[in-house]
Length: 379
Image (cartoon, rainbow, N blue to C red; front, side, top):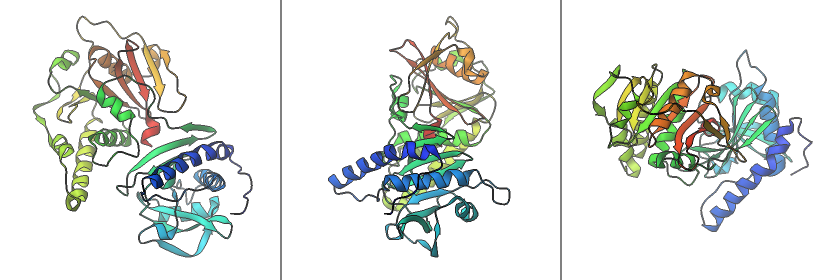
């Protein structure tokens, strides 16, 4: 491939080598296990794609913000490729003009070397396992993803670029919390799409997507002690647990029924996540049985008020910052932290209207509530 000019977007150079190393390691592992894997873009190709996507994200097409997903993939690696007669140049203007045609979820512009430069050959809905995908999420906000391979819609975030800030996702950041939470933070591309942990990730994504902010509490199924931290009576307490999501998450469909099952999971997830838009907390067991929504949190009788919280972020090199609870920014976060303090086998998920997403749980090692910001995993 011919040498490309230096990118005008400095973060493109900053992130390219690290992202290339990640995908190269994945490819080596796949080959060692004789598994099929996608081609890996070289450093220059990653720089070029990030640079073009960033400047395209700042443009407008008839007043609309471009929503683009770029995949480094050849037509031969996809199923039913839509190929242009003449490849488009990988430059902001061309990406902005074609964006309305590919803004629907699951459609990717295919990028591949052509005559010494990376060019856009067309569009596709299918990406091979381990494929490099670059998504324009908002103006100046890019997300580099890896395709998980089992389903066309399953990706894991590798890096987030926001303006001049580069965040390499490190979802395994240290946390000694309840099993449900530690499993969430261990999510990676080796998980199967029907892993029950993935249901929690889907709930978080859907909860964040409605944009109203919300609070979701997970409590053990074999105790009612959580009620000591909830104002009684509960506005929307259920007479019996609603178990649709719980039952679906435990099913093991065969190949013929997998798509139908996945669609049912998604509908159930969206229904439960939608309840978090109601003022108050939605309460589920750790097995995904719905118990109540619109619940008001109160400090547990006889328990102290939470006085400090360790905050970390799901990115590499994140260190804990101990903050006063009043610095969290709102009553929803403060209530979630208090609940995690008083109910130490519970987990609280909080979505902010501005897109931030924080998980609160008790850390036995720190003897304090730990708040872990995870929105980089959910973009």
